[in-house]
Image (cartoon, rainbow, N blue to C red; front, side, top):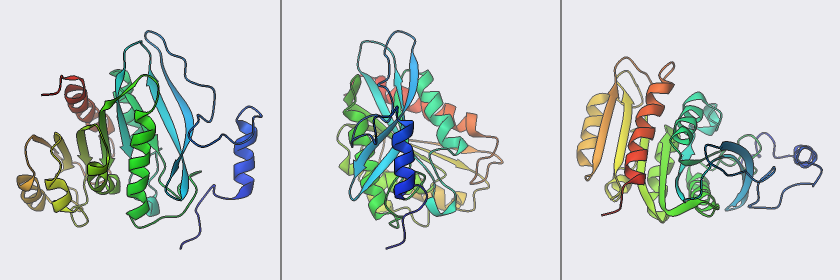
Length: 258
């Protein structure tokens, strides 16, 4: 096993407890700060911690205000060993765009990233993390557990596709800059929920000719969007990506099933 990465040490855990209002370290599955207020027109983000298989993960939860249950979307970040975290611009932009549409959103750090405990697990434990994040989000007051979506960026798309059949209530899935060499086509062909793929035409990890072959094999319903001039990092295109993903998820998560 690789050593746990940043924030897994005891000193960091004690510091977290001190910052949580003097209550000590939050218990598993509870917010790391005060519970989010709810009310018309209110959208808050709060730090949370929740358990996954063999790890405890940190996340940021967006909770739209209002009395009626809302859909929820989990956002999975890029590769942990290449600077991926819940704070990369694309992940934050997607979460913000969804929150503005009244969708509950959880972005989180995979095991071994930031203050999430554990260590990088080559995509195996990270699938458990995505499933745990979806379950945690679906259990939040005010979130409809039957209307859950997932957005994965790069490594997060690989993980999300493999986690999809383990997420009850999954109604839509978005793959942003999917790394085709690692993407298991067989897993994606089993996903019956609506799917959106967002790719740049200069993405070396997702060449367009291979992408078209992969996309053609996916079952309907599906949509694709190619971003001219965009590479794998999507620098400067965060708003465009977030807007497209949020519009797709908003449409499929808020419509009546069937």
